[in-house]
Length: 340
Image 1 (tube, rainbow, N blue to C red):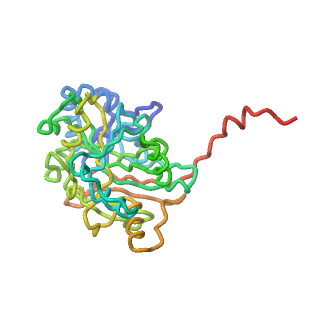
Image 2 (cartoon, one colour):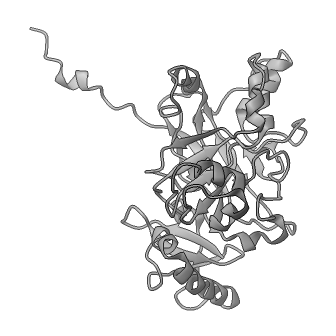
Image 3 (cartoon, rainbow, N blue to C red):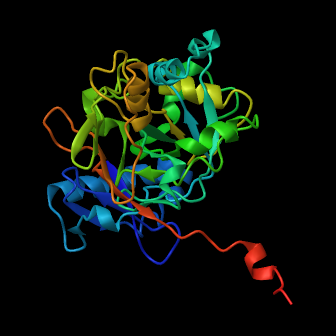
């Protein structure tokens, strides 16, 4: 089934089932008010949502309405936890090669992963906000899984059973803020803007043969200003599949229902299918002694989407425009006494 959170006057939106063709939706207050509520009692709630979904696909009833992605929040507008990995080693290897660094040997045995901000995810059509283009605004196309409860010490062989839903992600990075932040020895905070998600999240069965229980076996299409940036295949070169990432995250602690886990930027060896972020293209520019491609500018538009074998959109498209948000006045400007 396909699920969305429709914008209303609450922080978590209204849970809706969305038809397979992404044309109709229906609010399901009578089953669960929010996606988090559904996840918290998934074994009881999911069959009811599935039944409503099947009804909507057969014949939209009087309570159905036109599905408009612009009216969607992120499927899970805020989560108890957001973990993002770097499962595609061609991405890591290329970026390190461009700065003259080698891929660490342990990178092939132990995944990179960080815990990011999850109190405020944004919808597929919400703007990418930044105060300055000097921050190095970049998109990063990824796949994410939304989990049920995962006990500490979950083994790889069982970890896939915790996957409830999948979604597309734009894990927006402010590239020029990353080096000084990582130099402090901790991790990403200021260099990660609000993460955007596809209009709908889908259960694994919606992917049919494009889901093998561990990874998504379809290309992800990425465009900037209507021009193809790339279409790397999500099923190729994923060094650490989702069960591996889940087991890694749960090695020493429980993961609560509604935790979201990202794959990291999708990337294929050789990069003949193009790129899912501008940083990789800039790395190629550097290695070929070319002027680096600019990062995103105000007014630029991005699109991230995945189609099934028949050419139909699976998750709907992430379509965002980059906008400038005002810099808040510094406290000192307010509190500093006037000169006499």
